[in-house]
Length: 254
Figure 1 (cartoon, rainbow, N blue to C red):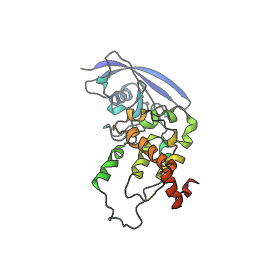
Figure 2: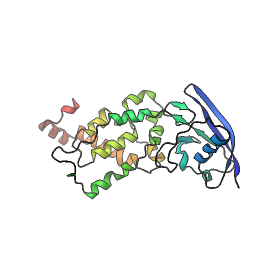
Figure 3: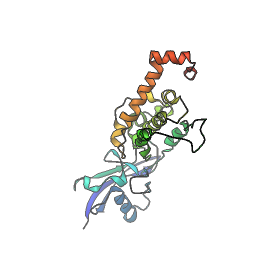
Figure 4: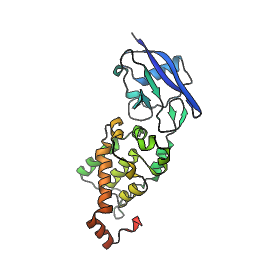
Protein backbone atom coordinates (compact mmCIF):
# COMPACT_ATOMS: atom_id res chain seq x y z
CA UNK A 1 0.00 0.00 0.00
CA UNK A 2 1.31 3.43 -0.94
CA UNK A 3 2.03 6.41 1.24
CA UNK A 4 1.44 10.08 0.58
CA UNK A 5 4.55 12.23 0.13
CA UNK A 6 4.97 15.96 -0.29
CA UNK A 7 6.52 17.29 -3.49
CA UNK A 8 7.43 20.77 -4.65
CA UNK A 9 7.75 21.00 -8.43
CA UNK A 10 8.82 24.05 -10.39
CA UNK A 11 6.20 25.24 -12.88
CA UNK A 12 6.78 28.02 -15.34
CA UNK A 13 8.47 29.04 -18.57
CA UNK A 14 11.17 31.37 -19.87
CA UNK A 15 9.31 34.36 -18.43
CA UNK A 16 9.33 33.02 -14.87
CA UNK A 17 7.63 30.57 -12.56
CA UNK A 18 7.42 29.21 -9.03
CA UNK A 19 7.41 26.05 -6.94
CA UNK A 20 4.03 24.35 -6.68
CA UNK A 21 3.09 22.02 -3.83
CA UNK A 22 1.64 18.55 -4.41
CA UNK A 23 0.76 15.60 -2.20
CA UNK A 24 1.27 12.44 -4.22
CA UNK A 25 0.94 8.72 -3.64
CA UNK A 26 4.24 6.86 -3.59
CA UNK A 27 4.57 3.08 -3.86
CA UNK A 28 7.43 0.80 -2.93
CA UNK A 29 10.23 0.59 -5.51
CA UNK A 30 9.31 3.75 -7.39
CA UNK A 31 11.66 6.43 -8.69
CA UNK A 32 11.07 10.17 -8.88
CA UNK A 33 10.09 9.94 -12.55
CA UNK A 34 7.23 7.60 -11.57
CA UNK A 35 5.91 10.30 -9.26
CA UNK A 36 6.19 12.97 -11.96
CA UNK A 37 4.18 10.71 -14.26
CA UNK A 38 1.56 10.21 -11.54
CA UNK A 39 1.36 13.97 -11.11
CA UNK A 40 0.70 14.30 -14.84
CA UNK A 41 -1.98 11.61 -14.68
CA UNK A 42 -3.82 12.89 -11.61
CA UNK A 43 -3.13 16.54 -10.81
CA UNK A 44 -1.07 18.39 -13.44
CA UNK A 45 -1.76 17.04 -16.93
CA UNK A 46 0.10 19.96 -18.53
CA UNK A 47 3.31 19.40 -16.54
CA UNK A 48 6.21 19.30 -19.02
CA UNK A 49 9.06 16.84 -18.47
CA UNK A 50 11.54 15.33 -20.91
CA UNK A 51 12.14 11.58 -20.71
CA UNK A 52 12.56 8.59 -22.96
CA UNK A 53 14.07 5.27 -21.80
CA UNK A 54 13.38 5.30 -18.03
CA UNK A 55 16.47 3.13 -17.68
CA UNK A 56 19.27 5.63 -17.10
CA UNK A 57 20.63 5.30 -20.65
CA UNK A 58 19.15 8.13 -22.70
CA UNK A 59 20.05 11.06 -20.43
CA UNK A 60 16.77 12.84 -21.19
CA UNK A 61 15.28 13.23 -17.71
CA UNK A 62 17.97 15.42 -16.17
CA UNK A 63 16.72 17.70 -13.40
CA UNK A 64 17.67 18.92 -9.94
CA UNK A 65 16.27 17.02 -6.99
CA UNK A 66 16.65 18.83 -3.68
CA UNK A 67 19.25 20.98 -5.38
CA UNK A 68 21.40 18.14 -6.70
CA UNK A 69 21.65 17.41 -10.45
CA UNK A 70 20.28 13.89 -11.01
CA UNK A 71 18.37 11.69 -13.42
CA UNK A 72 14.71 11.46 -12.43
CA UNK A 73 14.57 7.83 -13.51
CA UNK A 74 17.57 6.77 -11.43
CA UNK A 75 16.68 8.50 -8.17
CA UNK A 76 14.75 6.09 -5.95
CA UNK A 77 12.17 7.36 -3.53
CA UNK A 78 13.64 5.08 -0.89
CA UNK A 79 16.65 7.41 -0.67
CA UNK A 80 14.47 10.06 1.01
CA UNK A 81 12.98 9.95 4.49
CA UNK A 82 9.21 9.60 4.79
CA UNK A 83 8.81 13.14 6.13
CA UNK A 84 11.16 14.77 3.64
CA UNK A 85 9.83 17.20 1.05
CA UNK A 86 11.17 16.37 -2.40
CA UNK A 87 11.81 19.46 -4.51
CA UNK A 88 12.17 18.99 -8.28
CA UNK A 89 13.44 21.86 -10.43
CA UNK A 90 14.89 22.17 -13.95
CA UNK A 91 18.65 22.15 -14.39
CA UNK A 92 19.99 25.63 -13.73
CA UNK A 93 22.66 26.03 -16.37
CA UNK A 94 20.33 26.09 -19.38
CA UNK A 95 17.32 28.25 -20.34
CA UNK A 96 13.92 26.97 -19.27
CA UNK A 97 11.45 26.12 -22.02
CA UNK A 98 8.62 25.03 -19.75
CA UNK A 99 8.42 23.42 -16.30
CA UNK A 100 11.21 20.80 -16.07
CA UNK A 101 12.23 21.04 -19.73
CA UNK A 102 15.28 23.14 -20.60
CA UNK A 103 16.95 24.18 -23.84
CA UNK A 104 20.20 22.19 -23.99
CA UNK A 105 21.06 23.19 -27.57
CA UNK A 106 24.23 24.84 -26.23
CA UNK A 107 25.73 21.36 -25.87
CA UNK A 108 24.93 20.36 -29.44
CA UNK A 109 26.37 23.59 -30.76
CA UNK A 110 29.60 22.86 -28.92
CA UNK A 111 29.57 19.29 -30.25
CA UNK A 112 29.39 20.61 -33.82
CA UNK A 113 32.50 22.70 -33.16
CA UNK A 114 34.48 19.58 -32.24
CA UNK A 115 36.80 18.47 -35.07
CA UNK A 116 35.59 15.08 -36.25
CA UNK A 117 37.59 11.87 -36.12
CA UNK A 118 40.13 11.92 -38.96
CA UNK A 119 41.14 8.43 -40.12
CA UNK A 120 44.64 7.85 -41.52
CA UNK A 121 44.87 8.80 -45.17
CA UNK A 122 46.85 5.67 -46.07
CA UNK A 123 44.22 3.24 -44.75
CA UNK A 124 40.97 2.26 -46.39
CA UNK A 125 37.80 1.52 -44.41
CA UNK A 126 38.09 -1.99 -43.04
CA UNK A 127 41.87 -1.73 -42.66
CA UNK A 128 41.81 0.11 -39.33
CA UNK A 129 43.49 -1.87 -36.56
CA UNK A 130 43.83 -1.06 -32.86
CA UNK A 131 45.39 -2.79 -29.90
CA UNK A 132 42.95 -3.87 -27.21
CA UNK A 133 44.75 -1.70 -24.67
CA UNK A 134 43.98 1.37 -26.81
CA UNK A 135 40.33 0.37 -27.06
CA UNK A 136 40.05 0.00 -23.30
CA UNK A 137 41.83 3.27 -22.65
CA UNK A 138 39.03 5.39 -24.06
CA UNK A 139 36.12 3.00 -23.54
CA UNK A 140 35.20 4.75 -20.29
CA UNK A 141 34.42 7.97 -22.15
CA UNK A 142 32.13 6.14 -24.59
CA UNK A 143 29.75 5.40 -21.73
CA UNK A 144 28.56 9.03 -21.73
CA UNK A 145 24.76 9.21 -22.15
CA UNK A 146 24.77 12.97 -22.72
CA UNK A 147 22.55 13.77 -19.78
CA UNK A 148 24.58 16.99 -19.48
CA UNK A 149 24.53 16.85 -15.69
CA UNK A 150 28.27 17.49 -15.78
CA UNK A 151 27.67 20.56 -17.94
CA UNK A 152 24.96 21.75 -15.57
CA UNK A 153 27.00 21.41 -12.40
CA UNK A 154 30.15 22.96 -13.87
CA UNK A 155 30.33 26.38 -12.24
CA UNK A 156 32.11 27.84 -15.28
CA UNK A 157 28.88 27.31 -17.23
CA UNK A 158 26.37 27.42 -14.39
CA UNK A 159 27.38 30.68 -12.76
CA UNK A 160 28.91 32.64 -15.63
CA UNK A 161 26.74 33.03 -18.72
CA UNK A 162 29.48 35.08 -20.35
CA UNK A 163 31.77 32.02 -20.43
CA UNK A 164 29.52 29.93 -22.66
CA UNK A 165 30.85 31.38 -25.90
CA UNK A 166 34.42 30.33 -25.14
CA UNK A 167 33.90 27.23 -22.98
CA UNK A 168 32.76 23.80 -24.16
CA UNK A 169 32.47 22.07 -20.80
CA UNK A 170 33.36 18.67 -19.35
CA UNK A 171 31.21 16.62 -21.70
CA UNK A 172 33.19 17.98 -24.67
CA UNK A 173 36.49 17.61 -22.87
CA UNK A 174 36.04 13.85 -22.50
CA UNK A 175 35.30 13.66 -26.23
CA UNK A 176 38.41 15.71 -26.98
CA UNK A 177 40.50 13.49 -24.70
CA UNK A 178 39.09 10.34 -26.30
CA UNK A 179 40.01 11.52 -29.79
CA UNK A 180 43.41 12.84 -28.68
CA UNK A 181 44.39 9.42 -27.31
CA UNK A 182 42.93 7.53 -30.28
CA UNK A 183 45.84 5.84 -32.13
CA UNK A 184 44.09 6.10 -35.51
CA UNK A 185 43.12 9.76 -35.32
CA UNK A 186 45.27 11.63 -37.82
CA UNK A 187 44.77 15.11 -36.37
CA UNK A 188 47.60 16.40 -34.20
CA UNK A 189 45.92 19.62 -33.03
CA UNK A 190 43.41 18.25 -30.51
CA UNK A 191 45.33 19.73 -27.58
CA UNK A 192 45.63 23.14 -29.20
CA UNK A 193 41.93 23.13 -30.06
CA UNK A 194 40.98 22.20 -26.48
CA UNK A 195 43.18 24.99 -25.15
CA UNK A 196 42.40 27.81 -27.58
CA UNK A 197 38.85 27.07 -28.78
CA UNK A 198 37.21 24.93 -26.10
CA UNK A 199 38.40 26.85 -23.05
CA UNK A 200 40.14 23.99 -21.26
CA UNK A 201 42.09 26.51 -19.20
CA UNK A 202 38.86 27.80 -17.61
CA UNK A 203 38.43 24.49 -15.76
CA UNK A 204 39.96 24.53 -12.27
CA UNK A 205 39.34 20.79 -11.67
CA UNK A 206 36.90 20.98 -8.76
CA UNK A 207 35.61 17.50 -9.75
CA UNK A 208 31.96 18.55 -9.44
CA UNK A 209 31.34 17.11 -12.92
CA UNK A 210 32.70 13.71 -11.87
CA UNK A 211 30.55 13.68 -8.73
CA UNK A 212 27.25 13.94 -10.63
CA UNK A 213 28.03 11.61 -13.55
CA UNK A 214 25.47 8.76 -13.51
CA UNK A 215 27.86 6.56 -15.49
CA UNK A 216 30.65 7.14 -12.94
CA UNK A 217 33.07 8.40 -15.58
CA UNK A 218 36.16 9.85 -13.95
CA UNK A 219 35.88 13.00 -16.03
CA UNK A 220 38.40 15.06 -14.10
CA UNK A 221 41.07 12.47 -13.31
CA UNK A 222 41.04 10.50 -16.56
CA UNK A 223 40.17 13.15 -19.15
CA UNK A 224 40.55 16.78 -18.07
CA UNK A 225 43.73 16.58 -15.99
CA UNK A 226 45.63 14.40 -18.54
CA UNK A 227 44.48 16.72 -21.32
CA UNK A 228 45.70 19.75 -19.38
CA UNK A 229 49.05 18.03 -18.83
CA UNK A 230 49.44 17.26 -22.52
CA UNK A 231 48.58 20.86 -23.40
CA UNK A 232 51.27 22.14 -21.03
CA UNK A 233 53.83 19.63 -22.34
CA UNK A 234 53.17 20.58 -25.94
CA UNK A 235 52.99 24.32 -25.39
CA UNK A 236 55.59 24.97 -22.71
CA UNK A 237 58.00 22.02 -22.45
CA UNK A 238 61.31 23.40 -23.86
CA UNK A 239 62.34 20.16 -25.60
CA UNK A 240 58.93 19.75 -27.24
CA UNK A 241 58.90 23.44 -28.17
CA UNK A 242 62.35 23.17 -29.81
CA UNK A 243 61.34 20.04 -31.70
CA UNK A 244 58.24 21.70 -33.06
CA UNK A 245 60.29 24.71 -34.15
CA UNK A 246 62.81 22.47 -35.95
CA UNK A 247 60.12 20.45 -37.70
CA UNK A 248 57.98 23.57 -38.35
CA UNK A 249 54.93 22.25 -36.52
CA UNK A 250 54.20 25.43 -34.62
CA UNK A 251 52.11 27.24 -37.22
CA UNK A 252 48.86 26.20 -35.58
CA UNK A 253 49.61 28.37 -32.56
CA UNK A 254 50.21 31.46 -34.59
